[in-house]
Image 1 (cartoon, rainbow, N blue to C red):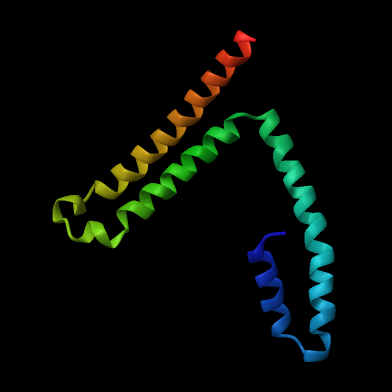
Image 2 (image 1 turned 60 degrees about the horizontal axis):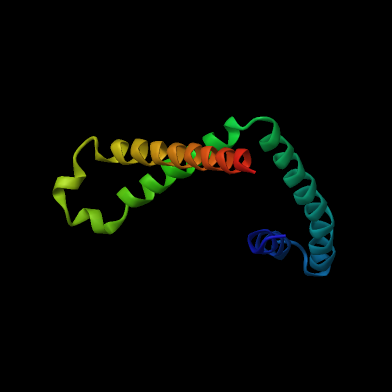
Length: 116
């Protein structure tokens, strides 16, 4: 279980009556740990069956990375980078890089598998 889940559980329990907090934390752990294990197994099966999900995930990560880069205060110092289409260009470029990275990695793995 990740730290953010533990923080969310304790934050939710903090709003409850003090005599019920421990019971709520224990209940949250008993429910969330199997749910996370089951959910991750489901995601792994989904990734094995539909490889496009991996490419879409890589593109989404690229899109988010482009947004983070373009929203960085460093770019505010450069007016030329703040053009109207710069934000979308960064998102699209990073999404394309994410897709390219995934498909290149997949091709290399296929070549290595064929060599053995």
